[in-house]
Image (cartoon, rainbow, N blue to C red):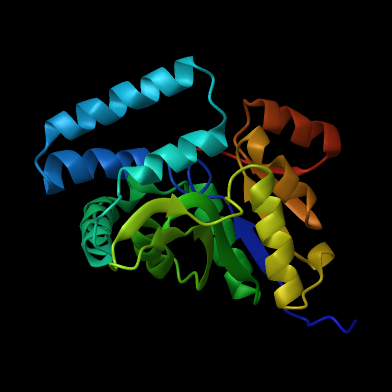
Length: 225
């Protein structure tokens, strides 16, 4: 198979490019600032505290999160996501991990195309992608029912854990790109399958199991500051 000369850098988002957990930070904004419904936030937090105590896997937690948007019109979520991002982008030094963004910009300058890979969703990721000139995003797809509203279900595979590596492989196959020429950035052991799927893995953070693994493999690491 002929391979294209295109090179890609795959970036996890939460705790890799930004200092926050986008899904949960957005949900707090959505319920308190957008809907002015603190009871909904309290229900959500109690639900997720119970699920975590029960040891539910991340895939189940992800599905549970998106069921909270069941019956919502997509445009409303996009509008709220833009408002959430606008607030954060007014303080970019607080939002972004400087070392990771610097690497993203450096690679873009060398002709490498950046790609978000996240279990988060387009309503919150797209404004960040626009700010960073990122044109590709592998993220959670919220399914839409016949009534044009979210069904509460999401597409598969999920872009978390091993699903990130699956999504990256499919993306590279679609673009006929050589994985050995590509980069991946992550901060958590759950990113390891994605990091292993490319030629140049990079770990953000210096005091984590993944950082220790990176050191043992002589991978590049970046400060999480």
